[in-house]
Amino acid sequence: MSLAIVVAIIVYLFYNSWLKSLAVKKFELEYLKEENKKGMTMDSKNVRFDSVTAKSNKILQYDFTLVNDDTSSLIVSELKQNLGPIVLKAVALDSATFVLKNHRYTFIYFYKDKNGDSLFSVTVNPRDYINFFSRIDSSK
Image (tube, one colour):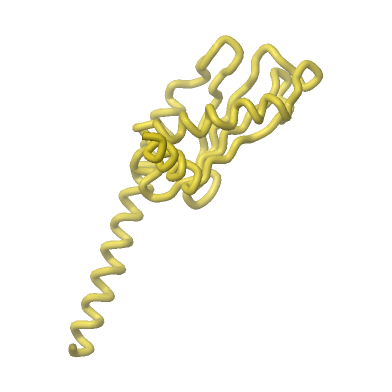
């Protein structure tokens, strides 16, 4: 194989990879725009979706407020433990983020109390949502 062919293949692979990353970044920006356009919305009686932001390369953070609670009225460790599986299922089954999950994004769900004080965050990595589907398949 000549050097020119090897160089052409390398350039093609680099260019193809670069185009894909641009397309994913454009999708990410559109997704953030659409999600944030909704504004602050109530997900339940107690939980308000505030915003979603891109934190760094392939990491999105969703911010939520528990509108009826503050740190003194909660057992934070229990709440985090109970919400973990719910957040994982929500991320794994969310079809709107399929493209992002296909490119191995990490999703952080950050919760604060009604006073704006930080409570906890739940992080869902690519390994987590991939394993979620593995567990479903193995239970059949």
